[in-house]
Image (cartoon, rainbow, N blue to C red; front, top):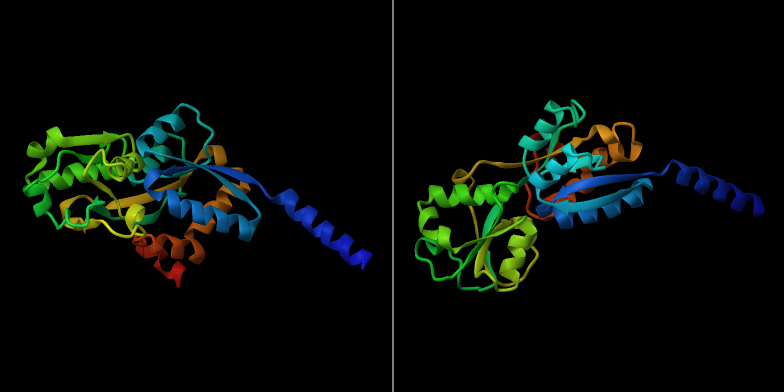
Length: 252
């Protein structure tokens, strides 16, 4: 019995010695899926992922200024590619981990009925994320312009620094409705929403990249591998994201 306990302790000590941590910058729209995935990641690998959430543009600025992130989960494809081009990302490590859906959402169950909600406004304020730093904010502006309502609605727009703050404006009643990510509201009961058709804005391809600061960190590389795997992909799909074709098989 003592030998068995000693052997188990030796195995545990060895696995603990190899367990590591990685610092991950995560686009705000992916907060809840990333939190679930990080928990599963720790359960399966012993590694931990320390997550920070915010706007992709702000994160990229911080990365270029020496922030200690090792993995970047952006809300767009442009910034991870730029990270590689500018020497901050590891070549060949970029991949699309999710494809997002933009929605117009309100807590009022009768307010959002479709694009006509924007054409005949019955509200004071509409929330969006800052289009300069948040891809979902840029998609919201593109959508309103393609519907021909942007100029009329511009005075009523309130901007959050990221998509989480845009949702908070709606949640607290500071805006009657807002453009947010489907993932943020898919599990909220009540309210009303319109899933914006993909032809009204550029695809929201969300790419991940291993940063050079994490190139020698096994936990960072393991986290990205786990993100491509079936367990993570099932979580991602449960929040309303589409999978990139190259990862479709991973989810079974």
